[in-house]
Length: 310
Image (cartoon, rainbow, N blue to C red; front, side, top):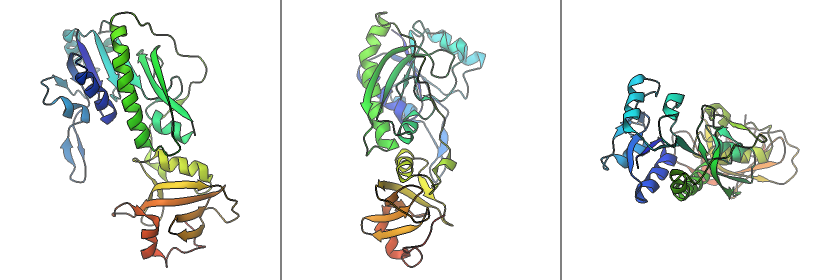
C-alpha cells in the first residue's frame, strides 16, 4: 500500500499525525514552500513538513503542480491514494487521475454547504448551529466531488474560529482513519453531493474584520468569534483596537451605532444597529490582549460614556 499526503497548515498536520500514529504507510508528502513568518520574518516550514522532517518521508514543496516534472515524480511514486487536507494548491486533472483510488479530500464542512477556502469561519458568521467534516473523492470542480462519509458536530455558542478548527481537525482525523480501510478495500463507494444547499466560503480578507457598528450586535459578535485568531475584528481608531471577545446583549438601544453606553468591570457596552455589543477582551496596537476594564483604566478620559467609535 502506497499512500501520499498533501497538506500545509496545522489542520492538515493533525490528520497526517493521526495517519502516522495509526501506522499507515505514508510514502510521500506534498506541502507548500517554506514561508517567512513571525516578527523576524524567518523562513518557516509549514506544520505538515515539521511533522515529517524526522520521519524520513520524502517531502516535495513545489510552488505549483502544473509542471511536467512534478507530475512525472508523482506518477513514478505509483500511489494507491493521495489524501489531500487543506493543501492550498490546485490539483490538475493529470494529478487527480494518477493514484489507483484517486485523491481523497477532507473538507471542514457538511458539503455541499460551504465549498471553498474558509468553511469554518463562514459557518460561524452565518450563525449555523451545526457543521462537520466531509470525506470527498476529488474531481476537477471546487469541492464538488462525491462523498465517502460525513460527520456532524454542533457549533457551540462559545466557539471561535480557533476552537471550532481544533474540534473539526480531531473529528476529521478520526473519520479519515475509520473510513480509509474500506475505501482502499473497494468496499466504500462515494455518492454524489446533494443538488440543493450549495454555498461558497470565500477566503477571509483583512478588510472584513473592521467592525461596522450599523450591523446588529448578534452579527458583530459572530464576526468577533469567527475572526479569532485571524484576521481579528478591530475598531478603526487612529491606532486600531483589536477585539478578541464580545457578546451580544439583548437590550433595546436608541443611541447612534458606535456610541459607548456603559464602561464597567464587565466590559464596554457599545450601541449597534440592533442591540448592544459588550466587549470583554481587546488588544491595543502593539500591546498584549487584556480585559476591557484594564484598558479603560488608562483611557477613561478619552473614551467615556457618550463618546462614539467610528
